[in-house]
Image 1 (cartoon, rainbow, N blue to C red):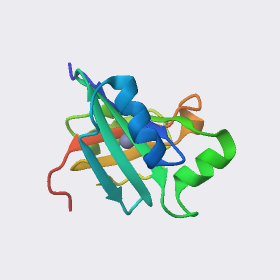
Image 2: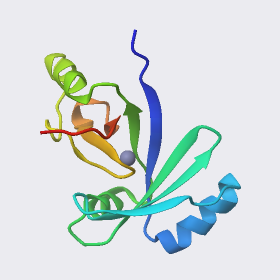
Image 3: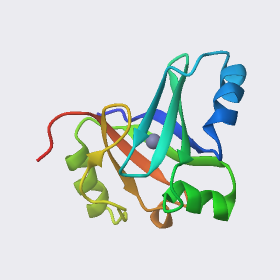
Length: 138
Ligand code: ZN
């Protein structure tokens, strides 16, 4: 049986310049990567604690989903990302089970991953991201 694992937890923050040093202290581990994700209009920063990964997300434009999220809910946990082996197959399986996808085609995410999101309306209010190690998608 395939074992989906938590690939990372995404946390919405107002300012990476404030939150990067905060998480470095919290996790006692340096931010190992920052990356702009244009599809979501966010700046991201990554941390590792053991084998757990944390992704901080900061909006760089008012139109970013992270900006909307912080307006509504404030800073905090934004999504949980599960690693999958075959993202297209997993999307098809979840859709057949009645889950709503935000995007039903995988797209380029941060950290060299292909990603898609499930609508929180169909997952008890939790935004779920599926991530797969990048390979060519057509
Ligand atoms: Zn993520």
